Image (cartoon, rainbow, N blue to C red; front, side, top):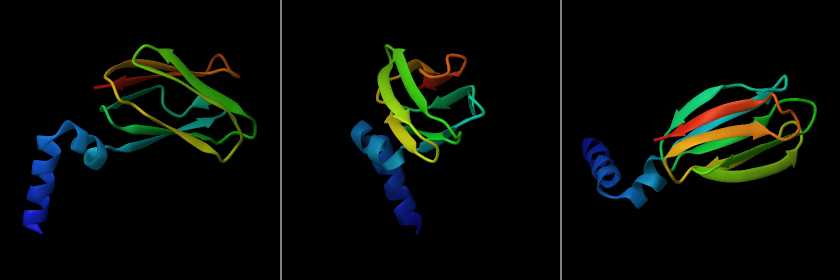
Length: 108
């Protein structure tokens, strides 16, 4: 077991592309009561954020930030859509349906 942990550590430290696939994390951000469940999130390059709609109406999550441009389109309650962040920077996230819904993701 010790040798497996050591091997995994070496693989994660030795290659950026391997690091992205083996060491990346998934974070969940809900949309509830016309707000994101987190106002700010700090993640690493290669991590994924899953945006889950917990409201009984549609949301449309998007970002026009230089660090990550995306538009998840409108989707209903119970549906989650994922975004993988592949470059460092500050990402301002908004909802096209509810303009007061904003959050910031810092990608390190």
